[in-house]
Image (tube, rainbow, N blue to C red; front, side, top):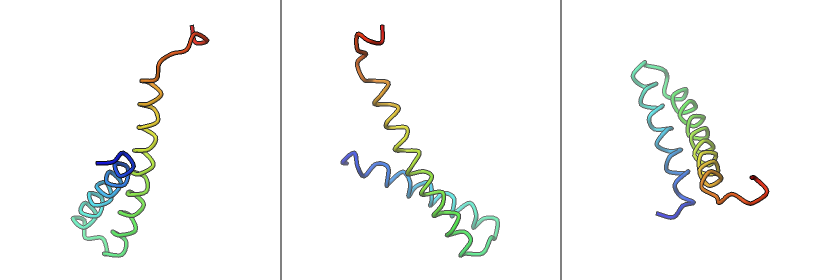
Length: 66
């Protein structure tokens, strides 16, 4: 799987989980979709942020950091 699809898939997974959770509480369908969409956007952004932090952590340190 290409790296650029990973945040999209993680965002969709988070959105689907939130939609299913809100459906359990019998929230109207359109509100469940809105909550799921917002959660998907948040999951997408969080995935990108975590990837950047992981890359920065694994990057070799320069001599200026010492």
